[in-house]
Amino acid sequence: MIVTKAPQTDQDRLKAIFQSITAESCPHTYNFHLHTIHSDGRLEPQQLVQQAIDTGITSLAITDHHSVGGYWRALELLQSQPPDSASSLPHLWTGIEITSRLLETQVHILGYGFDPHHGALQPYLVGSAPSGHQAQANQVINTLHAAGGLAVLAHPARYRRSVKELVNAAVQAGIDGIETFYCYGNNDPWEPSPSQTRTLMRLADQHSLLQTCGTDTHGLDIRRRL
Image (cartoon, rainbow, N blue to C red; front, side, top):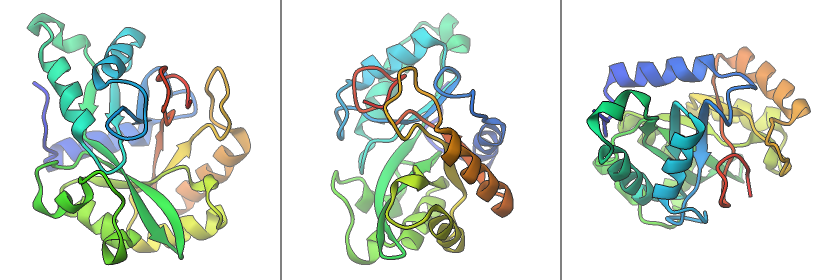
């Protein structure tokens, strides 16, 4: 059975996965940053999930911008699989990527394991970036927490402010983790960028943050970024 909500026991399971992630985890075991046609990706949700099944991924999240439409379509495909295949299917977590403001800088916050029906989250599921108070990072993080989810700062080394400044500010805002393992080029094969990874691992350890990985797929192959 695939759950669509995230009670505390399920959140603990997700935290345990994030605590186990290493530079080798993505993209063959886990992938927690994926886009579909429901935001700015090129893959149908069903195509994305079929690739995850074919490559043996054990857990993933579709993190479309301001939408969970792709999540619902992917969930339908997984739930339509024969019952005797359930043990070999990947676990699909709820996911989203929300445009936010942190230190007067536009950043992206990834949400995981939340209840997609939660009332507080609905303004962030309308397909467009929030504005004003709703766009402030602490408000986005608080909303994800209210919906039972975890909040992660996406690709921290892609912004105009320094990684250290942004991570420190995100910690003050209540962030749960950072996307430590990320490919800042478009390498084939995909691999975390070594220099940024080392810096982010140190900051994650310093602040006791969860660490995630994802290819940030926007193209037709979940093992690449574009």
